[in-house]
Length: 610
Ligand code: G6P
Image 1 (spheres, rainbow, N blue to C red):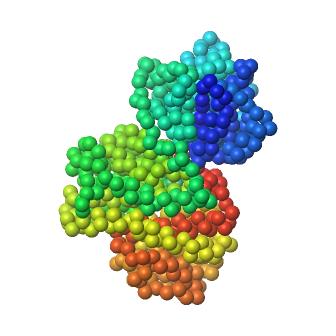
Image 2 (cartoon, rainbow, N blue to C red):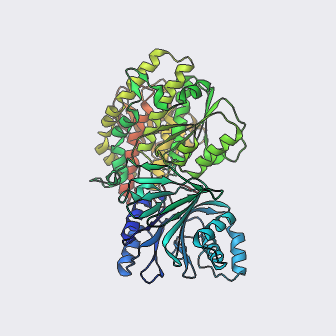
Image 3 (cartoon, rainbow, N blue to C red):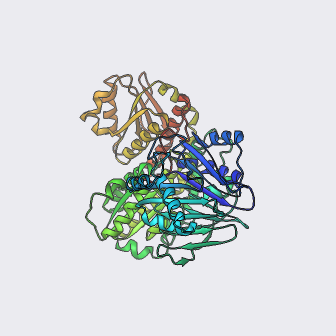
């Protein structure tokens, strides 16, 4: 991951770079740095361990100014978070670079460069890149050619921003496998890992393709493709406003994003429903033929998006009658799966840039699976460009590292897909009518379940000194329990596991005692009685139960059972509704524990490395 930004302008770019870094911080936040070419044509750099706020503080002590600069916020892969490992990396006061990605052949390059007389100052894989560029410059190449020759020597993934004091009003940018966008200003240009970083200065963007190298000055931009030919890449105008990324009066982005879910879901549905049907045209041109050919679905994803896929498996098989398998992308990409030609491969991803999911999608295409679809929240992302079809969630920017509104909008989009596939596989017309009605009711129902906020905040106190928790669900609520456990671990650092409730007696029951809270989701469905029996097994062993239960279910709180009532909900959409109280629970537990809710330790939002 890591976030990179750069600017070449007529004004001092340091404030632009810093604001951009704040907006990129979700990509990594263990150290940060900035380098500019100053008015004496020297490269000046400041780097700090910790968040961008630390860098800001350091810049107050040692101000930098310059019209050409690059900056970086890091998520450590090679070498611990430290000042010397932080980017930008510099070679002999002459070239500076920022890098997102992993250089796989760095050891080999490091050895030959050490033999050639370079003294390394960091443990990073990145440092070899800057020395390589310098060496090519020494052979008489200009900055563009030096970068071009260098990237040909690299194996792995990179988005690079390069500056040199021999060419003081120029940035060279290069991309392979990691995202990079160019922002077009008036008489100025920018680069960044994500449009979000540049929204305060422009809404016009050009997205680099893999293999592209861009030669950027204040008033010129030339893009070369991987064969070295000059290419035109389309200009896109972002619809996002800089304010969409503000936290407003909420204490954390995560809470804001939890409360944005009714609107995010309404927007995901907009223009996709008509009367009591799902509009197939909203899946894009060419969708009909592709959907007609689908005999099965294979979902690949990571993290929270993987859990969305697991819910969809229950829906696709039980409601649409379509076989579905779901796999963690990092496994899929290396296990040599057997291609099924009539399968629709669906990559689910908030960012559309997760390295494992993107590579799995590319691998699926290579292996000869049928068509591909991305369910994604970022229209200009690599996955959207890679897949045959894109079904966009419209959650708006999600900043909190722990995903919330992206998950519920993914489920909403997946339910739309269930309907259009179900139609082709014998699903009753009446089912579509009911599902559409339920989809339309989602924003209102989420508003309802959000009224549990205060009660959940109180309930969280019970967790403050717990070290472990078990989450239980059955059927499509099992992945909801998994998502609940993931949220709790991610932001409160409490060890949490999820089990299908029926599996409890095959091992995890041994863990149950008064110190192990057990959280269960209990909608009113055909599995309810079975779930209740599983919960009795917990009570009988002195476990403390917290149950989110449908109001029509006969469950009451007593000495070691706390029941939180959820308004009655039809079964198919219940996973979307029951997700919300679990998000709130982990949020309030994390707040009580005083963790960094939006940027939990060791994690990053967009994982663009393997
Ligand atoms: C990281 C984030 C998770 C996210 C996962 C997949 O681990 O911290 O919140 O679910 O990546 O990200 P994606 O953008 O592909 O949905």
